Amino acid sequence: MLALPQEYLGSLCEIKSLENELLAVGRIIKIDKEALELAGRDDERMPLLQYRAPVKVFAHHAKLDTRILVGTIYLSTENFVRVEGVRSLQNFERRGAFRVNSAVPGKLTLYLTAEEQADFDRRLVKASDEAAQGMVDNANLDVQVMDISLTGVRLRSSVPLVPGTRYMLDFAPLEQHLTFLLRVQRLVTMPNGETQYGCIFFDYTEKQLDTLCRDLFQLQRMEKSRRRNAAAAQ
Image (tube, rainbow, N blue to C red):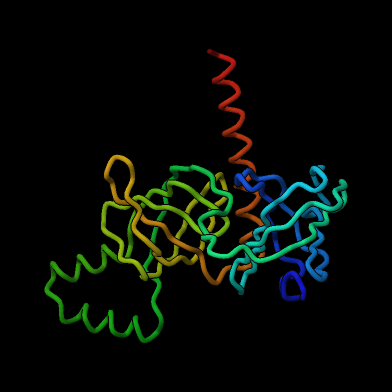
C-alpha cells in the first residue's frame, strides 16, 4: 500500500521528531510502498538526519486534508531524505503541526456564501439601527494572532467568536501581508482564564502555504536568536 495517495506528490511536508521538534521542511518528490522521499524547497539543501531515527511527517495539501504519519529515516543527504516504514498516525490533532508564537495584529472579515450573504442582508435591513451597527461591527473585527502554524492560528478577540464561523484573515507575520480563509474550530482556555480561539485554514493555495512557511522559519530563527542573546546576557 502506498504511504500516501499520489495526489500528495509535490506537497509541502514537515519532518518532526517524536517530541515534536521541527527537523526539516521539504516537498514530497516520491511516494513508494510505505516510503516517502522529500527534497528541499526551491533547491534548498536538506539537513542531515540520523539514520533509523523515528519521525513524524506532516503532509500538507492545498485541497486535501493534512496527513500525519510516522516512519524512520532510511537515507539522509543534502539533496533528499527517504523515510521508510511510513504509516498513518491515528488520533493525532492538526494543532500538533509546527507552531510559532507571534502576537501580531490581524483583521477578520466575515466570509459568507451567496445564500448566507443574502440572509445576512435581509436581517440587516430588518434590524434596528443599533442592532444593524452591531452586525456590521461583528463582521469586521480587529484581533491579535497569538500563534501561527501551517494549518491555522490561535486568536485573541475582544468579541466572542462562534465555532464554525468562517472569516477572511489579513495579517502580517513579518513585513508581507497574508490573507487566509479560516474557520473557528474551538475555544481555548488560557492559564489566566482568558478565552482565545483556535482556527484552521481552508481553501488555500500552494503559493500561500509556501509564503507562510518561509515566514514561520524566519520567525523561528528570530526567536532562537533572541533566546541565545538573552542567555548570553545572564
